[in-house]
Image (cartoon, rainbow, N blue to C red; front, top):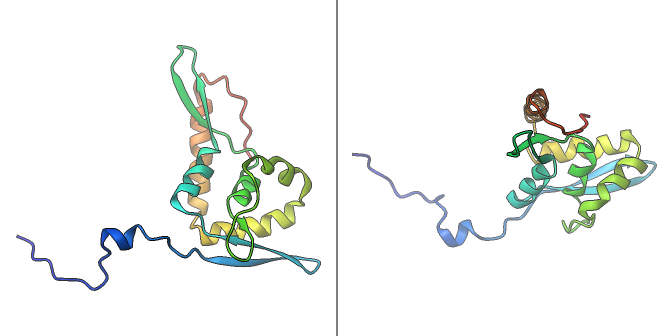
Length: 147
């Protein structure tokens, strides 16, 4: 039998469901300009990761999935760049223009900070690549691009 002690730090349902303050960080992009990035909510993280998944039918007509890593950085920026109050202002379809128009150096500055505050590790990125490689090793007709 396990005895439970009353803990001061235990969250009840009401406290657990409260809107959490998300960390907002200023990112200096050089040339005296900056942006803000913030932590994602669980839902936003799922949307971001979902934007990297390609669903397709295999040769047998069954659904399969592979990773689509094209524009990974710009997609992450869309889910984390915000105003100074933490309000996201890019739209989900802005990633292509952002990826095409912004220098890799500036985009990398944004992404480095976004990855840090959202606990997206190098291992997470390697797992995406590994899953992408595994998905493409099969009979996928997908033409996804790795970055």
